[in-house]
Length: 386
Image 1 (cartoon, rainbow, N blue to C red):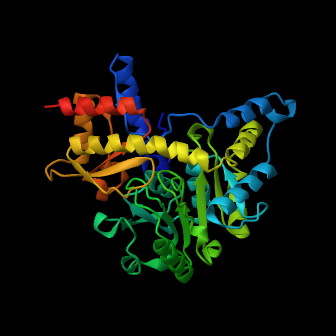
Image 2: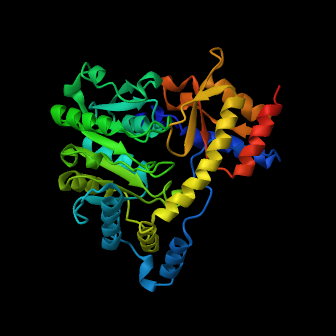
Image 3: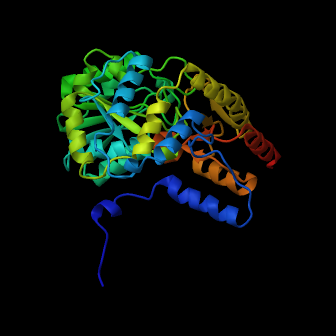
């Protein structure tokens, strides 16, 4: 037999965390106690009312069939109301909001909706690896744009102007930025919208971290004219402790949303009705929910800063989001080597910055998604290393 995979499978690697978590799981099966500070998956449940809403809906006999690809109207209305409440952005729930099975799936839908084989796509370095892997899957040409610490991890739009922009159709943004934690700047978002309008490039801001350790959530849709050229993805994964529930959204103008829906309707069959009703409940959470969550993360963040110092890394205290990003002070040490040593000697799993691009090779990322007592145990283990 002479069977080979498609070129798209040959051109991508398995997702880093898929392979690394198998390694961690194998160590744990051997009885090794590994403390994971690698993945940004909240370790606490959603609000009790969200679980109650899901439980109640499960008993409805009509709740178990196929659901509309556009999502329940009550969910779309809740998403639009959420944008109005927190960002001051008005959206038509019928035509400018599309529920997603998480932002990661949204990256796929948007890429398929806007990119033809050979089209150019702007991908940040460092940045979320899925932007690159999905771009390769759809046959797009990747143009990495540099984000650097000395520039606050913001795009250099003058440098972008020197690229063959006539070939580029889409640009990925992600602010607050993952992995660096760089806060969203309205100046950057305005420049991005102007850049996109001037060159007919769709700007996509991936915005799941705006509520984490941040008192002033920002949306690209707050920029005048953004809706004409931009799409924003948002998610309940981080802000509402619902990572495994897979609830996200895309917001934009009716034309863009209709194209995304055309792709989505041919890929999935909609979300589970009880899940959508529970998500509707989650979106109604008040400031006290976010304050409580951020109090927890702020306490953990202090321990993460101690860990960074213990492993010889410097960091910017203004970072936002679920992670702490640190620069390795020793120029002779690479991020993968340091991460491997921490796993082997301290049994602490951290993420090497090289996973996110060449500009991340000198950095380490720590997740805040572990109980504080486990983070302190990780700190003690690291301090005990020779």
